[in-house]
Image (cartoon, rainbow, N blue to C red; front, side):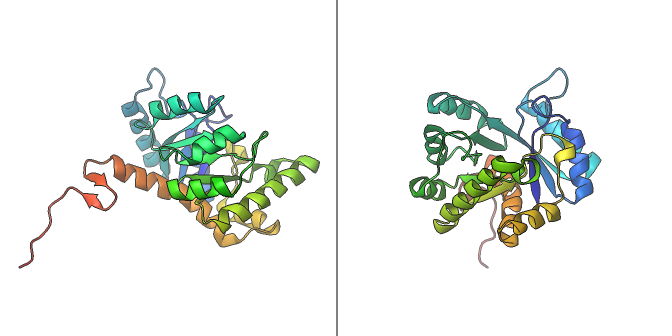
Length: 243
C-alpha cells in the first residue's frame, strides 16, 4: 500500500523523512505529490528527480514515486499545467474543489487523480462519476479530516466523504485513499488508516484498495513511459514462433 505525501517546500518534512517513516510503518511506497519535493539542491531536471527517487528507494526499501499536484485557478490554466507535467511526472494529480475544475479533471485522461473534489464550493455528481470511470481518473478520498479535524468541520468532512463514496461506488469509478500528510508526524500506518475509516462506516477492503491504487497508477504509467509500450495491449518485443 502507498501513501501520497506533501514534502518540503509545500509540506513540513522532506521526502526522505516521509520515505523513512513510511518504511517503518509498513508502506510499500510513497507518492511525493509536491512539485519540487524530489528536486536535489541546484537541479530540477527529470533525471535529477529520478536519481533522487532511486536513492531514497535504495536507502529506505520503499518505492518513491515522482508526482505533481496541480492547484490551478481554472480549467484553462489547469490544462496548460497538465500538458507541462504529463511527460515528466509519473503521477499527475489535480486539485478540485469547484465544479469547473472537477469536471475538467474527470474528462481529461492525462490526469491520474482528482484530489480533494469536495473542498471549496465544488460538488461531485453522477455525471462526473461516469466521466471519471470512462477516462480512468481516480477520485481521491481525503481522510485527513478524520485524523486532524474536530467539531463541525470533521462532521461536515465525513458527510461529504460518505456522499462521495455512494456516488463513486455506484458508478464504479476508480478511487484512491490518502490521509494527506504534510509532515512525517501526520503519517499513519496502513492498519491505522483502515481501522479509523472502518470506525466511521467505510469498508476495510475498499480502503485498502484505495491505498494500493496509488502504486497501481505508478506501475501503469511507468510501463506506458517505457520504450516497449505502444498502446494498451500492444507492446514491442520478440515473440517465439509456434514450432
